[in-house]
Length: 254
Image (tube, rainbow, N blue to C red; front, side, top):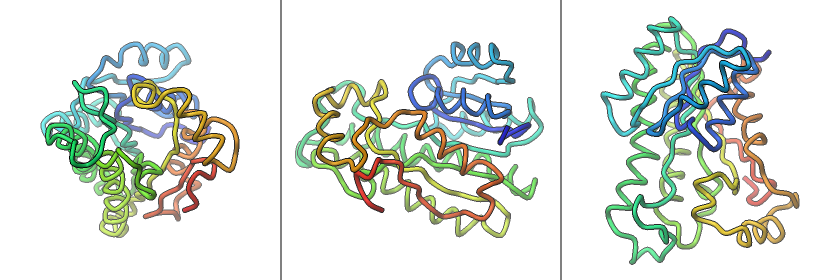
């Protein structure tokens, strides 16, 4: 088990990639705090069913109070924080499904929501756990970025801008925290058809990405991303920091 007895927080873990990450971490031996604005209890039960130790929290990553409590409750339960996986993200506006639109048609509410969750939320989660990691003298932070943060994406400016911010923040945090033996890296997935992405992309669009843009002609699965996240969270990646690992089947060569 690559993460045996490590204590990990995974945000956005009620569904999609976060759920897959949480189950994979549990199988790798980690003790988990899973958190989301949605109910994490069903995932917690799945983890307990395979023998894992888990704390499930309702956490809004855009709230400084919530993220501070997330870190404190984790330490109260498990005595330390070894790993933070910043997976929580917003894809589109809450009320407007057709959020893929030209820049001049993006409304400020949608822009603010995506930047708040994807950039501010990631910052607040890091801010909450860093003091504990500094005290321990070690820690791993893995941020979930996106291939769109490198390439941009037509009609998706708010999302690709936020993920570019994740990549830049990863570098800045790594530069700041290296003296404290805290590794900060990112994983940049290509198109993974989670529940959130199914609301944005049709199956036909996803098929087109695979056939015309990816070098490897098969769909990327959440488990493919989980493998990269586990690696960067493990002791095997102790000498890797400030890097962004693209898991995109060759859609964009980084």
